[in-house]
Length: 549
Image 1 (cartoon, helix red, strand yellow):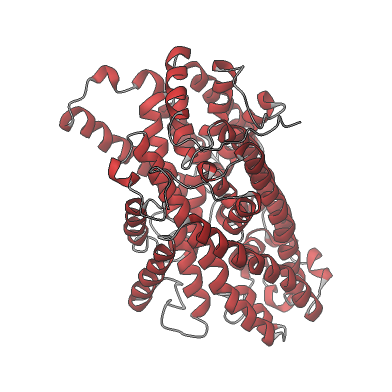
Image 2: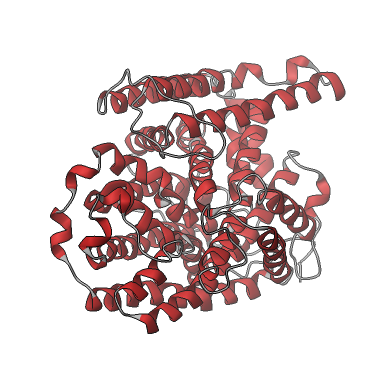
């Protein structure tokens, strides 16, 4: 139960590592390699390596930040330090919305795979949920939430067991599928059918970045472990490295196991019966029917396990938002197991809502990747601000070369957003702009708080950032982004060719980084805010980590 009204410190090094790894290996491996093969053909192997490199840059940044504030909901607190309440609230909402959408994605993954055997959940022509599918999805999501009402130790134990399964099944799938069907010549076939941009687009829209984003989950349990300085970096970095090996192996397997006749008209036309659940259908196609049943079982275990821990993560984000005033204080209420139960209920309600505008795995994953990477983009900025404002602060994990790695991480995160294409970027920034306008109206017209306290002087750089990213996307290559979108379509001008567009985004990112650093909170105010955060929910038996080499 909760000790003194605080969260328990039951998460050890293995629990944290598996927590992040369990978040990474979910529905992404069931769909990502197939979608990446269609987008980039043999170049999709490089797509996974690029995705892993981007995430590793961000993971290194957050490993330092999170260990400076070992708290549950740490990402929420990090977003407030550099630029105060306004930026903190905007990024709090972005973080919460990026996390709360993942459990619905995992539930949709379960139903999409099972639809090959029980054809009532998903329309086979559109891959979207049917009326029956909606009700079943809401019920499955409810099961995930109920499990989370128990102590974090129980959730971690369930996840540890599931993670062993989730690592074992993909690894064995590589061996089984390649033993039944191995066509190394596929690497040289139909190369002209995929554009070089497809290698980059696949990073954002084929579920590659989405598949890696679970690394952050250990960060948000920083307040529930006794040695965050040592455990969090190992969990974050280790989970990305292990997952990269698994995902690259799965992509090689996909490319070599498919029959040449299945993509005779080019890699984008790759198809076989039942490919809405691609790995299980591929097993049937090449004769490994017995293994397809194992994969159908995994299509329940892997996504369910990921949905479980993302629900845990989102409830901790809600807990952190309540601490800093970005959400009602009621969301800090704990049950007798030390679990923030009100935040869990809010998570469930909002997650259910996302089934309606995005009723399929493929429709939602690109938008989720964009908003999640955007939420991480604040990390490199805050890291550089903290190095300037508090250079002597003890850092249990100190990132070497931060002045180089942090800008690279910011550039890389903006590349990922850019690669999703103009339509997705338009939707993302349109949504965020609408949320900001609603908040500004509430602040000035309803709450009638002082205009001087709104925080314009520290938040102004966000507007050229969002507008500039949209403009670059609009004048960029039309080859970026998915071919078909569900909501609306914005056709880019093709004024920037591939290569020049990447340079333009990199230069623009550095300019925004300069603006953001220049508009940071004054040192005295940042110090006061940081000290206040350090006093919130600190471990009773906190063990300092050692300095990282």
